[in-house]
Length: 401
Ligand SMILES: Cc1ncc(C[n+]2csc(CCOP(=O)(O)OP(=O)(O)O)c2C)c(N)n1
Ligand SMILES: [Mg+2]
Image (cartoon, rainbow, N blue to C red):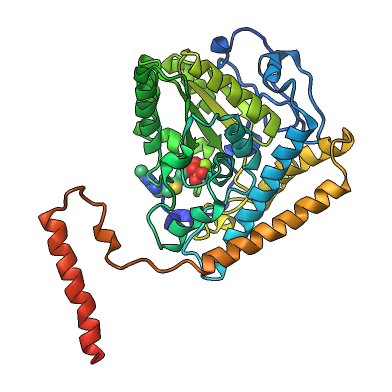
């Protein structure tokens, strides 16, 4: 399942016809405790693709977490999604211009990320994958800091403890264990903060994720597992990851699992608030499966036309997370042309700043790679540094400098 194996014949994914992908249609409606949820397929949705607020009593338990949301806060969520999408588009363009080595776009996943990201509290701790640009935005990480690693000028780009936002993690699923260990520490400290681990549908097949689920359950760790099911793991479709809806896995480990419409920012916010608050209260872990779609390629090195059909993408385009909130804001008279115009200008300014900052990023000191390996140094690292220095010097000699 590497990028080079992406060269397959196009075929349909199970995701395109799975339950709960359209509008407010669900196979079941039930109330009851959150812990009891997870036995049937259902999708928590508070805003339809047409931008209408749903008032389904089955989801009152979650809806209460956004019951008092103000027009100002709704505009804030919209602004977050628009600016995140703009930043993401700019990064994709910068890669095409040779300014970045690689980029992993979040296109289509803005609502899942902004909704869940805005549910976190300052003292909560976030463990992302490599695609959580919207969550980084919510945590206050300057977007330009996300680009250094993708330009190859640093190995991270920010101090995780400044924003309680861990470095991007490429080793699929490993951060679920890091988050669980961190959450166990939070509980031992007697703190009341929560921890949230992001991962994808593909990562759910990793042993690390199952181990994390079990540790979290047994130790009642205050961790929320936020799985963005974007239907694809590079070229591998959902049907190759699981025989049951992912959120139902939680039941086997002994904690609640919920499937939320990941293209609905309001539902994503509500469900994540619910999960984080119960974690902070000491009620243990929860799994959220945010049902969404990766609208773009896996990364800029991937070509999805080799393995999936355009009509699948088109079906998800109709469920666009930004458009649906815009429809709601307009129909409820919560935003006017002035707001949208101002946001457009803000987007342009962000794009310009991102371009300028990236192009001005200095190349790293060639020897920096040998720092931060061991706290007190190491003979082998010293030897490798000396070898590298000699290698570098050989160029100067060859050029007769
Ligand atoms: C342990 C490990 N195995 C394989 C890879 C290669 N790899 C990179 S991304 C990816 C797919 C991940 O899919 P998913 O978890 O659904 O996340 P998405 O990219 O869709 O957001 C794989 C297999 C890796 N980075 N780490
Ligand atoms: Mg995926």
